[in-house]
Length: 244
Image (cartoon, rainbow, N blue to C red; front, top):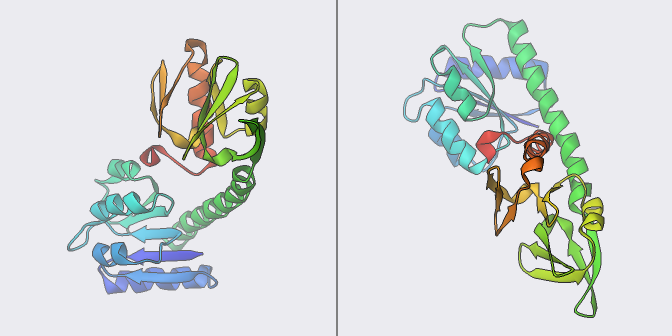
């Protein structure tokens, strides 16, 4: 587990580093004196304690750039400024810790962040199993193995199921119901003729789901349940609205 501190004041960096080392000596500790230095590193932190008021790029600018390349770092703002608390939500901040704070508060916030990190690791292990599911079908007179994680969406047309994958379209005779049961909870059936992979959704409205490639129809009666299911998927994957 990598825990990083980014603050342009050396005393603050050292103070936070001492607290982290005392609480979690097994963690890899990374220290950065500017947002620019943090953004240039290849060592992506699992948990980041980030100051806002810094020379050069401030913490909020740094966080926005960080999110473009790393959507999963658990971000804790550590700052004397209360004015940016609402902007913190826009970059998916886990917590907003206002200076000065006591040891108990720091231990509580960091402890919660580490528990979130451990839960995400557990979810990712489950996702690995989900992502390795395969589907064996007969297409064009040949047995074909399809990796379900590569299926963007499926549709029914003229008694055939068409699988739109990341690199090709595959047709076979089958039932959408059987495919849905095999695909599992990463997929949703918004319309009797469509099955979509949550992972490839780019945007949606009450009538249409727009995917990385192509689009699927939304049945009016399924829209509310779809939104709830998509929210649960994002929570399970450790995503939020800044990841869409």
